Image (cartoon, rainbow, N blue to C red):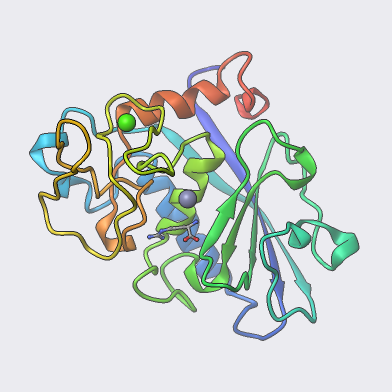
Length: 243
Ligand code: ARG
Ligand code: ZN
Ligand code: CA
């Protein structure tokens, strides 16, 4: 590793309607958001409250659009069973999944914005799925999820981050510098929002790994950064991506 992690992104677009066959501009707007959010150059990074200014992170991972693959399909929605990742099921197999992040863009359905595979799984299904209505910041991107943060959140999972509430009441996200949250937060929470968990900490609702609206999430923590970088380190499950 030379200290710089740059991830090539393969975008697989599966469309039935012309609207689902999103533009290159919409795809590039998503790559731009990932680069900002993972390098602390997002315009709302300065909105992180002073309480968390000591732990807000510049993750320092960049993304570059590698190729866009497009395929016409007859499916109205794909669900979450990974069919979109399989050519034999009407989808598209991933391209070079041990060295490139594969992103599938399609209609998922069921109110699901996106989903990701954690490190350590099968390379045949590795990557991130984002519903076309919640990808990027232009074209078919739909409020309040039109700032590209669904992909930021899902790529966080792909780099081994858990939800900030630990998927349980006052659960553990395995990150020391994030406060214990009661439960997921939604919408645009008022600050400060106090947890009723042990110690009643102020919740870090503006963290990308909460469930708030795109406009209300704008930071990773240093502990989350360490957890992400560990996946790319020697012996880590995503070391094959490090240059
Ligand atoms: N997996 C989550 C879902 O589908 C993604 C939430 C992303 N949140 C956001 N503000 N974009 O519900
Ligand atoms: Zn999630
Ligand atoms: Ca924590």
